[in-house]
Length: 182
Image 1: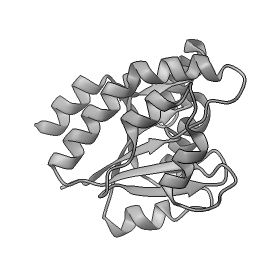
Image 2: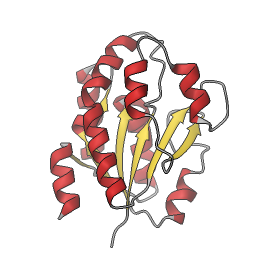
Image 3: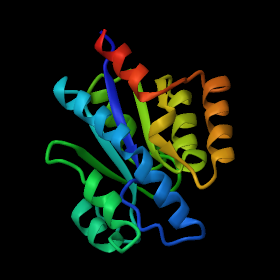
Image 4: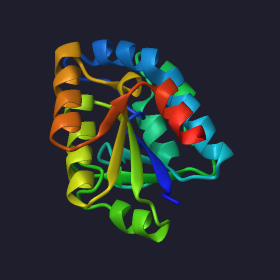
């Protein structure tokens, strides 16, 4: 049986950059879909792995990153998506969740063959992670309604690349959950 892991990329975020408020608003809209995927993964005891920017703390302690990132723009996102005690949490130094992190080793340890990628920004960190996952022979599932970028055009371009070049299954969360349940 194939084993699936859910990656939640850069959701603990301060949104303190150009167009950060736009991305925060888009992120609020797709949060329920990530939470539905998390619920399914928990029910089936499958790995949920947060991979997040380190915000110059260089400690894989999500409580410290939450403290540093929480502000008026980010608080609703962070409150909704805070990792649970059984979730895994890794920090990354660059755009890809694989670059200079133990993610690949962790996935091999859990015999993961399939990845569901969620998070922000779809056209940067999610896309770079998808590329590196593809290069490592993981099957990819990308829920279109659980990824956000600053612009819809950038998001659509990322989906096109992931589907056409990286052979990802790009569909909505509901369809992904139905497929996982069958």
